[in-house]
Length: 251
Image (cartoon, rainbow, N blue to C red):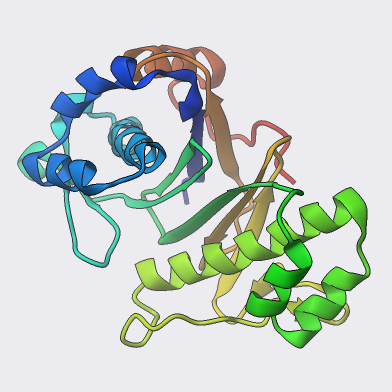
């Protein structure tokens, strides 16, 4: 089985003017949705996410960037398509937070990815009491200061990644929201019935990937270049054409 790949990029590096030409890469349906977003930050994340999705699929299938198109699906994740149907459709999961955008891709299994910017200025106690269970809040209460911030977002991201995975794998009933219990035996769970979590180390973000099988090998690359062409050059330089090893301090 080939490893999952997670690509991440800081979308705050570009101005709106610099990103505007990228709109030409989107379909009419995607452009329509882009213009419906009211918040400029959400427009930015959507645009970068759709470009990153195309890049991730092209890398996974050894196709050209322009050979990948995207079908909009109401109340569901976007569906990547390859021109000429030369390859099976990869499994993808997108996530964004405060301008950062990430895309997980796999040729073999459904995925759920969540990234969250760790923001200690929020009222995390009040927020946790409204979204977490009693046992989850009890576990969180033993942490303080910066450790509580990290623990909160790790738990939040784990629940979000699991929900996305179950949605992508068509496990949810009527697409209803679920709040799975993530605490057991005094600690945060890393697996459950039919799912496994992997935490990927990042200095600013909580990054959690979920799949139906243990994620023993994950490629995690933070892109630092300016365009999909440059991203390809960076990927080839850092990873080689067929890299199957862990990167960037995954734990």
